[in-house]
Every structure is written in C-alpha cells, then in structure tokens.
Length: 126
Image (cartoon, rainbow, N blue to C red; front, side, top):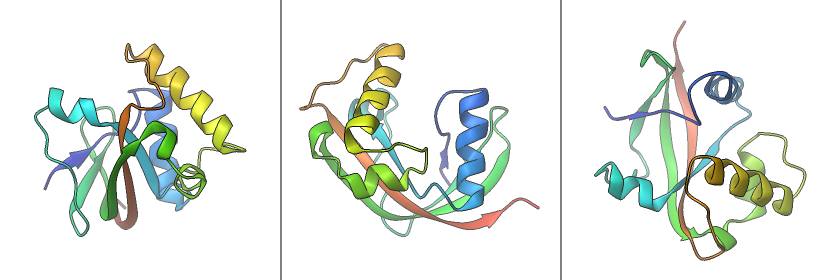
C-alpha cells in the first residue's frame, strides 16, 4: 500500500491528519511537478493509501474517490472547501496555497498543474 503525508512535518501535518480523522478534510491538492520529482504515479479511484504522521507511523487508511489534474486556476470551490482547513472563499484558498507553495520554493501561477484528490476515511488507528 502506498502512503500519503499531508502538508509539512510538525504542527501542520498533525492538524491536517486530525482534520482527516474528524471527517472534516476529504480532499487535498498537490503539485503535479512533485509527482515527477518523486517518480510517483498518480493516485486513482479505489486506491487505498496509508496516512502517515511525522515519524512515518500509520494513522489511518483513506480510499481515493477521485483524482483530477487541473490548472491551479481550475480548482473549484467545492474541492477547496472540502479540504476542511477553514478557507472562506476560493480567493482565500488560492492565497493560502500560493503562500504555502512559495514558502516551499515553488511559486505557482494560474497555469501551474495541480492534482486534486478526493478521499474517504476507511480505517483509523485505534
């Protein structure tokens, strides 16, 4: 089973994992370019992934329900809102994600290709 690590290690990853476990976070967005860097294939509907913490420990299993490649400008409010991170609008989501990726060393434009994943929690560590 492949794995997924959300956000960056530390408080961000802990918060995002907690949102998944609470059922609040059911989508996530990544840069398509990161898949090439990591020589990873795209996730696909029905695939199950192990959600990991900072130490690489199993937290839960999520099942991919949708995977779509689109431009940054093409991300919908429905997807952004389902990230469950408290964004109040699509503009707010875009500002937050532009800032995050710029801090990680990859500024994005409206044309930057992103991977929009939707998932459901199937099992959590007791």
